[in-house]
Length: 401
Image (tube, one colour):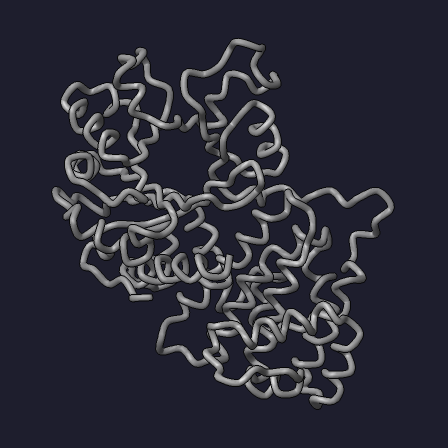
């Protein structure tokens, strides 16, 4: 994938959030664009070219939420590719000046989302141009209700915004939401009755291998551990023989696979397995978030960082939601799971060189333009570098789930 580097990336602040469907899968990504300073004009063509490098026209959908009225007005007048979904705020949807552009985009096949509940009903023809509305949880009028009575429906389906917990996500779907916007990671899933909340037995082999790789145990020790979990051995063989490696000869032994991977990449693969191995459907968005955090922290390290630093920042991001997944505090979790000192400091002590970057990554998950700008400055990074890293990591996430 190309590494986006257009000048507009220094003129805007970006944040993102997933759009999660009823099956708890990420059906699209919402990319929010905030202007920086008093920029009077931003090039819409440059924005669309940059977006297309991550989400090509034959790729997954991306929702553009542009928080600059002039840039959004320009966006409504051009013809984006069909996978670009445009979010239109209620005040612009009700403005007669944009009526023809909205109708033309809908006629061309672009999905449009109506953000917010208009103060006055839209004409039927114009309302029909919007596929779904976006209703913020704070504005939801049916919080205490279940599905609407038979025969009573909203005029168009809706996405629920402002969802930050699993309970809120479940409530939105009970009320008939098509999807929710945001990562439901602010509330830990309650342990099942009778569960101690510890590492599940089926993950013990993965945990043991991470320990052994960290201690650089000999290959024979790793191989003996892997034999305790045939399904894990199968996953490793499938991974090493996947097209991403481009091997001309099939790898059939664990020792050969480890030799090709190396201990560093093996630890990375095992870390991903640890955070994506759950069977709880409600935990799937948390797993998606963990993977994206790892990729983003690695990208923020920059091309000039050493491989060890990039690897540590990846692990820091991936493991940053383990407390939510396993219902245990970080100090207890990391007593049995070895991590580098800087990762331990960030997750347990909220300190060290990676903590500021981790806070930035959390802010990029749907934060406001001002909050993103403040965290970028606190980390002594440039907005252009952060935006490039965000887009690069989101592009990489499309290939890992």
